[in-house]
Length: 420
Picture: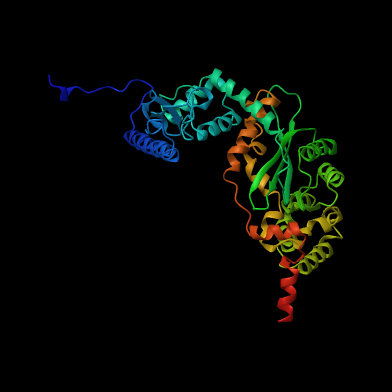
């Protein structure tokens, strides 16, 4: 019998995927090239340092033992290069540490982001090994229930440190604020997480605050805002966007009274339509869109009046719900037109936390509020990397300087166009 007639049978629970193996091989080669380029750049940066006899102080010194990094395509074997310092000893020794392959790293950041997502989807710690083996292959090791438990504790500690970070060098032009409700399995009451996302003067969105709250109460919001101010955030936002929750608005008026408010049109539309019969909701929704999609504030005011005139007699509760926040609903017209689509709703929070907000049954996989908070914090950190920069970010310094905008156009520019 020849070797060609011997076929290896697949073992139960295993599979062979040539495409995945090709991808792993390519990833291994690319990673090796990137690390080699990294160590070469490190050596070049110290090329001027020599020993007493004129030789280069830093030289290549082989590789560390091979280890596997768990990635989104399964385990990838890597060997980190070593650098030898011929002169330095102890604290004076120059050490090379790869940014791509940190010491003791056993999994990629993308995989760590996957863990809280699976946890919030209802996967228990005991089922992680099986779930990840199905996603990453049967060789996905190092992610046992004990490992997941240690990760959760580490994330909780990371969130605690994040909540104490210094904010004295930070400035936020806009705030988006909302409360996220999560029901943990071992808790009697639903947990309310208070979330604030801020826009920097460069137009970048950042997670500013994420803490436990009590039903979005004014006291809980006040504690969060005061904590931000104590940690160095001396100047409040020029505009805050949130729904009609009175707790946030009362708190920010006390902490930063000069900050203006913009009510979320998505929440307001839903609240108004809930007070009308279903047969009229489609037509009323179009009428509401004509208000907040109007090109000028005057057109919005006209559409506002038309809605009140049309529905005010029979559906006074719906109209009252709309007009009580009339000024705050149209505040965005006093800011650059490029920012309107960002300011009319609290969508930056809604879209980021949709998994948590709309899948509360699945999120009961979290045993405690502490675990839920740590998981959601890691989800927010992972999502933050893909948040879109604000359109028209070059207008943000003007907003900070107090430049006046009329119907989204800078007042000086508007006057020049009128004179021409």
